[in-house]
Every structure is written in C-alpha cells, then in structure tokens.
Image 1 (cartoon, rainbow, N blue to C red):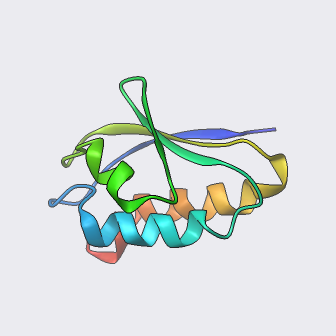
Image 2 (image 1 turned 30 degrees about the horizontal axis):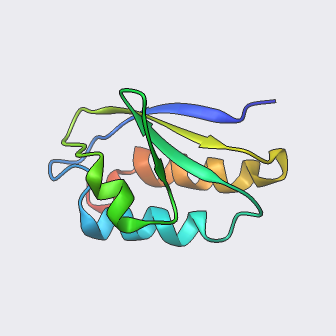
Length: 89
C-alpha cells in the first residue's frame, strides 16, 4: 500500500500560487492529512501558503504523503496533477 509518492515539479513556473491552489482543492477532499514534503520540510497540502512556502521551482523533487489509506485516490489525483504540470504544459 503506497501512502506517498515522489514527484518532480515539471512546469517552468514551478509550484506557484495557482498550482498550489489546485493541489489544496484536491487535498481538501481527503478524509485525513495530506502533506507536500521538500527536503524534509513538510507543508499541509490544504494550505496554499504552506505549499508556496516550500519554494519549489521547476525540477524540484517533492513527496506527497497521505495519512489515511482511504485517501489513495486523492494521492493519485495530486500526483497526476503535478505530473501534468498543473495543466500548464
């Protein structure tokens, strides 16, 4: 059972405010915690400001982690969103 996924930010603008808002909207649908992690620093994925605070330019490696196995679809949807460059590629 996979509770986290490592991803690379592919879009030129990185994980900026509009992209963070898309992640937050998905994370808000989870039953429990969803986190974006960069270099050991963890951000609540429901908080746009927390996500932006990670500072993730293009090429940054992040991990998205869920705390409840029932939220695997949310993890998968966030992963697909990031892999698709937040719809900007």
